[in-house]
Image 1 (cartoon, rainbow, N blue to C red):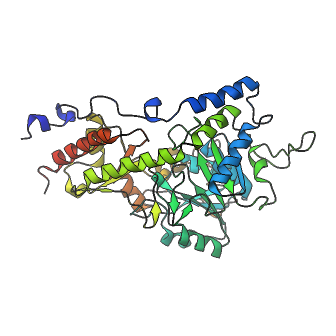
Image 2: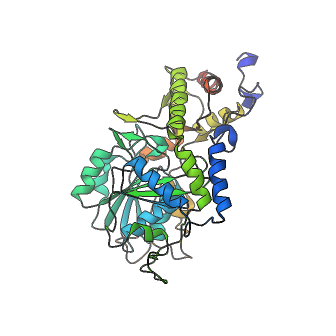
Image 3: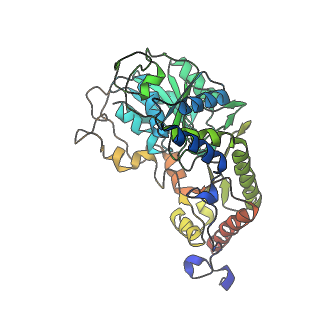
Length: 423
């Protein structure tokens, strides 16, 4: 029998965390203050809130380009919009294929489908849950146009072999850096290694404009269309009158969002340092604990901790991942099982059941595709197991040492309880 004080909250014991931890949902977990207010006020007083007539979005773009060391940056309305802008720039033919990870947000796949291209899921590396370079070449066909690399959880994918394969097969590399702001891969900032880098400034990200995104590139007009026109209805606004050179969406960022973004950029260093410090503290407190291992970061790389994630060795516990996470939640610790959930992306109904354009099932069933595409369970076994065994903790820059002590206490309490009686 467990002592009363050791009894899980799920089973009637006291909660470990009885008051809310800092969260990205409000000011407790976000670094937003006078700088943002002053910049927003200036935009409001100008009377112009729109990208088309203002200068603040342009200033935000220029600042982000300087920070990342690229020549071109365009601000858009979301991270999903950033990836869609990149796909509009690439301009694949219907039925062309884009390689993508099964462990990413649905926002990585939606732009592929809107461009009538087909997502080809390649399994992940068990160590860091990013695309496994060893599996890429077997997924490349005559219809493959690009590899979309998601740097998941703030940890970089192994870009050197990915880039070598892409160059050998003349493929474009789009880096999805929504969760990896200023993450470093062997001295390079992710997003600057491939052909295009895409960022999100949604509420939960390292810096935020509420919603918003950015696309960066070292060169423009590579596919006979300017990157800037790819989020702006194909409209070259520098010339008088209207013109629409190709099909493109309207993904403008507002001047208000950009004003917040400019203030936020000055906080990158402190925000990332605080996230790393908190993660290192939790690593220390969990070190040596049987049955749990932090999701890895490649040697020579710097993680920026969008989430803090650890893997369960379920053979060490007498419960499954769902029960383990339920117990943590009952202790007052916000967390999820797996990312993008307990199943990888292709097992969600939109993809699995082809819930796309009416009842057509396009582009999965399009005659332009080289085959009729199906995404069965077992397609990416490493990803499927990772989703069942990974505990995902939301992370932010306002988590202090005493908060981390409570987080660790909750995790260790659940580990102890569920290891008892386990062979």
